[in-house]
Image (cartoon, rainbow over all chains, first blue to last red; front, side, top):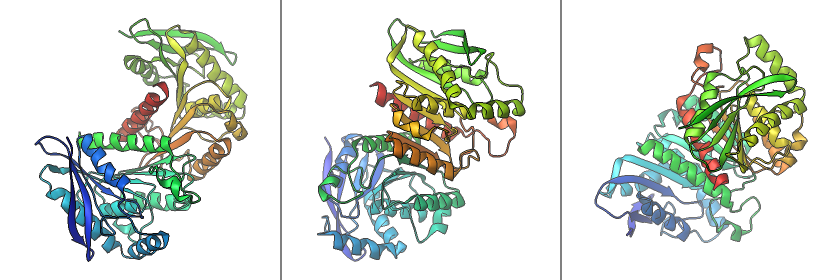
Length: 238
Length: 238
């Protein structure tokens, strides 16, 4: 049986409500920090924490907007993400606050931690990596790749995997090449899985409901990127 | 016990000698066609056939230069690959001849076939795919991506995975983007795994001996790309 708990905490001046999921047993387990999409912490991402716990990981789906719920509309999402975008230190603090909650769970093994994120949450876990955090792996799914602190790639200790759709209007070929250059300059152990015919938010079955151009669920790429992530976890948590 | 046989056959006017490896048992098994690097069929690639058979696949390491041995030197390799490059129909015929040998093995399941290739052998299996061959998956490792028959991508029935190092001097970012455009136009189920800090021939432990700039073995990327290939096989042979 998986144990589920919603945890309140304060970060960036707001009350956050994240979702912790802990697998059955008493041993310490590898731990996964999950950063939701720009829209906010929804039921789908909360369910992901439980899915990880079923696989034997302690998982914490952090909240970086507040209240543990999605933002009300696109305007609010764009404003919030844009504001954060210009302040990488705020992004990192939001990530760090979530990581601290995860590490406070006694079942989480602090020497075996990964952070994954979706969309803006992908940018968030990449910023966490750039801050030099002691996480073994960082995975971004259709992540914002650009950063205002490219020089901090030299701090990255995690193995980095980014999973990007070729038809993602938010991650242009130019942005991919800039990321490649950043990772090269930083000497990072990194890779990019590029999925053909795949748009933004391809991991989220609720994407199609939004009916936005360039945004859609892609089951095959979702499965493949999930598998690639688990392969990386096998590698770093072996 | 794995059964190993060297098979003579004629293709492109030459006598070829490929290496067949068959797993223990009497059932039909998924089958893998292996296309060596531009240098020729060496002991390392022959050993790969046995490695597949140990995993339960019928495997045939084809020979596309002749004699079942490597070419003598870089000049011969460059001349041979350049000559073939301008004649995609010859490349396809060489690939097809190897595939026919593989399919002639009664233990090979003709409905579950993959083709993998390295360096120029990657170009060869991609041409096989462009010819419309009934293979379920094609994997290119540090493959030559360019083709003189880009319009034939529309014929591709295989799921395509290419594994490329960011520091491969033979596969430029421009060539990657052209391949992306080709796959998009052809409506192919494809993806590219891009490995940071990784040069040409990263799958071959003997690469370092050549002491050529931009060419070196990369154990981690070798392991990761092998894992990605097996994940794809699990997907298409399930």
